[in-house]
Image 1 (cartoon, rainbow, N blue to C red):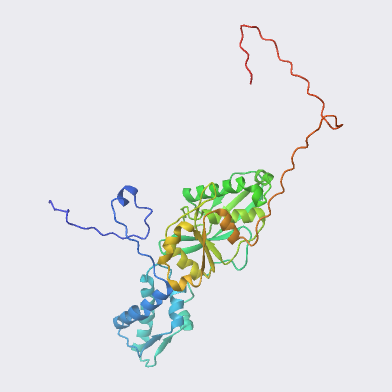
Image 2: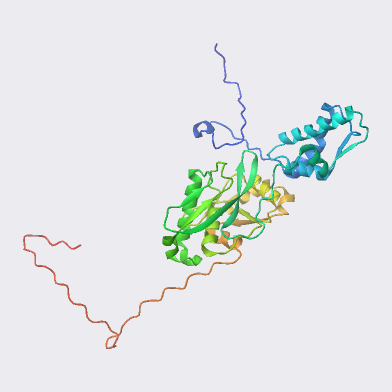
Length: 357
């Protein structure tokens, strides 16, 4: 039956914007809602989720109490999300087990600390500390955005003898593959400045792997991370273990802006990173980063790959020595080359044109 939709407002939600077709996205007004910080999740849990679940399970403050350390561990090790939906589920799981002990006659208050979480919820399910334990050659850490918020990912590069095509593994999308090739092209065009012999590209090939292999990945924001890992593999210079980066790379080595900066910086903070390299054009997005996080992590703005490598590598690559110029011969010297024999050109008949190749 006919119905007038001219006054109807449709509201839709989603975790990822990329799968939405461009024609449909152009007809939408996009409202970005960034994820919560760790401190915000802890406060939401203490002020709202715990009282709500306590009432739902018939408990009172005299029956259960959460320590601050337990709430932080609950957020970091038992949930992996941008919001607090799973955090509320885990709190409800704890409340159910405590409610059972109360129904069985327990009168003492149950204190939920880190040790009690292991007994009630089992071993931790997630780890944010994914940074390398020490500086590595051919390994750099990038920042990505997933459906559950920001995350850090290690990009590994190794060299092998043999002339083969570029090897890329880890379920990489086409955009990410193109970023890797753009990074390699920039490295080859600046090989002398980076101290890389041109013969290296002819005799060896690169293998780039992005864990976890079972998770599809795509997007241009890992361009400078892959390029940094490749430079490290070619030069043998390690990359700082406490540094993360994000940014798109061009053939000229420019660093282009990316999206989801707040989620990425939050992930960098949770991973324990001390330095984050971001495109300079994303400086305007730093106002969305909480002050408490900006005080604990150093933000480096970069316009070019030269600035990225200067910050990420433990030392600067040593350029190759300049190629010596060909010696000139003065007339009368013994080493003067003999005069060239004039080229005999065939005599073509007058009616045939002479073609010089």
